[in-house]
Amino acid sequence: MNENKISKVKPVLWEKTEKRAVRCNICHNRCIIPEGKVSRCFARKNVSGKMELNTYGLASSVAVDPIEKKPLYHFHPGTKVFSVGGWGCNFRCKHCQNWNISQSLQKEAVHFISPDDFVELAQEYNCKGVCWTYNEPAIWLEYTIDTGKLTKKKGLYTAYITNGFMTTEALDLMSPYLDAFRVDLKSFEDEFYREICGVQSAKGVFETTIHAKDLGMHIEAVTNIIPTKNDSEENLRNLARWIVKNLGEDTPWHVTRFFPCYQLMNLPPTPIKTLHRAEEIGREEGLNFIYMGNVPGKSVTKCPENFKKYNS
Ligand code: SF4
Image (cartoon, rainbow, N blue to C red; front, side, top):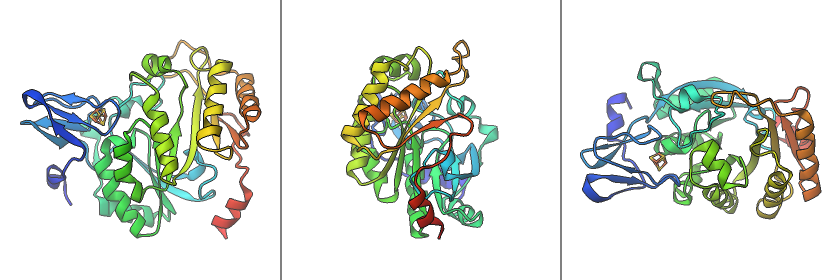
């Protein structure tokens, strides 16, 4: 496949609406895109009343990482993962560390990677799996499906590093080719999602994460704890309780340290004692595996059996 064939790739989960506009049903924004316009996530566009893809195969970032860096601690530990990111995002997170790729599409900086090349590169670098990461993978769903199919045929594992805001119907399309769902559970409160992430509600994230669990995917959750925004005892307890109830007590919960970034430069880094408190709360609520992230000396998986299994 070359770039000229991108326009031939059929977009999924869209419908026509009034006045030659189109609606996208890939994430809970369910955007209506007027004729001639590009979607808020940059990944789709309305050309003459029909949906077309805008970023298929256009990579912003490619790396070979330890799987633990994602972070995924109980999923093929000790292996290398081929990590690819695209452009754009369905969120507008004020603390985004990758805002230069998630909030723009810099046409001069794109690299087209065909699905065949994607898998060949993963194998060439001796990766045991691939992940779509750095920006929200669901927004280029068609590309992750095409690359996921080829990746699974080669016997490699696959993982989404996701904000979880895709619809359940989008996840259904991806699920035959998806093994792990590393999801941000940013807050239990809609207000946080509105003020910090620029979307209406947290509800879709929790619904879709339960769906991922029902589909049998491996799940790990991350909460980046931001001072004064989502660090209340009540919010952290609600999150931990929800994970135990809906995902199970053995679900890893990564509580990570916030550092001032992008539009939240006015806030201080998360105090270490807040992370310790989150860890305590998680234990009190019944979680067995809580990991602190962005804290020196704390990034050690407690899953030694898995480590032996995947490295023998
Ligand atoms: S993926 Fe989400 S943000 Fe992008 S066009 Fe579709 S509904 Fe809108």
